[in-house]
Amino acid sequence: MWTGSEEYLCDMELAQAFHMARVIGMPLLIEGEPGTGKTELPLQFAKSLGLELHVYPVGSKSSVEQFVAKFDHVKYLRDSQVEILNAQREEKGLESKLSTGGRNTESLQDYVLRGPATKAFSSPNSVLLIDEIDKAPREFPNDLLYALSHRRLVMPESGETIEVSEEDMPAIVITSNREQELPTAFKGRCVYHYISFPPKETMHQIVAKHYPSMDEELQNKCINLFYQMRSLGLERAPATRELLSWIKYLASFEKAEALTKVTRADGMGVLIKNHQDLQKVKLKILGKNPYQN
Image (cartoon, rainbow, N blue to C red; front, side, top):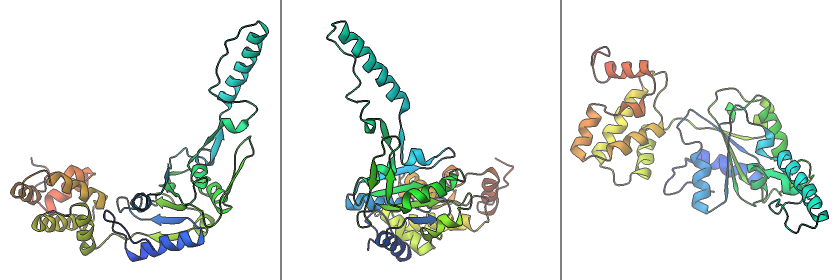
C-alpha cells in the first residue's frame, strides 16, 4: 500500500481508499474543498514510482470524445484530396508527390486522435487523473462511467478496440470540488473518499514536507495565523495550497523580517481571495478599521 512520499503526506484513510480502488480496478473519486491536495495524490504517486501519467482537466465543454478518442475528419478529407492530386500528377508523368505525412487513407487508425483514456489504457499500470469532474456537463459523468467500467474502448471510425485487464488497469483518480452533485450511478461505480481539512498537527507535517528546513518559530506563527483566519467564517477560507504559497513568499526573507511580515499579515493576496473576507481579516485579526488605509 502506497502511503506517500518525501514530498507528499498521505493519511491512512486516503491511502487505504486508493489501495482498495487499485486492487478492485475501480476509479477513486476524491471530493473536498479546493486546495486540499486532491490532485497531488495521483501526481505524486506517479512521480514517486516512475509511472506514466495521463491527465484530463475537465471543463464546461468536456466530452467523452475528447477523453477517449476522436476521428480527424478534416485531416482525412485533406489527405484524400492529396491522393487524388498525386494520382493526377502521376498520369501527367510528374514524379514529385504531395505528402500526407506518412498517413494512409486506407488505414483509418492514422486519423484517430487518442485522448488520455486511450493512452492510459494502452499503458499497463499507468496513472490517469480526471481533474475537477464537477465542472463537466451533466451527461459527461454517465458517459464516462460506461467507458471506464467496461475496461474496453472502441476507436471511432476505425473500430479498433483497446482493452485492458483488471491487473493492468491504470490507477484512476477523479477529483471533485462539489460545485455540482454527481449522478448517483456514477458514484456507485467509484471508491469514494472525502478529504477533510487537516488539523493543525497534520498541517505542521505537510509544511515540513515542503519546507524541511523552515524555522520552527516562523512555521508556528504562520500556521497559527492561518487557522485563525479559517475560524472567522470567511466566504472563501484559505486552503493548504494558499498557505504553502504564502510560506514560499515569506521564505525569501530573513527570519526577523519574515516574522514581522507574519505579525502584520503581509501578503494577504495569497491567502484571501475575496474583498469582504479581506476586510474581516483586517478587523478581526489586525484590529484595523477596514475603511481606513
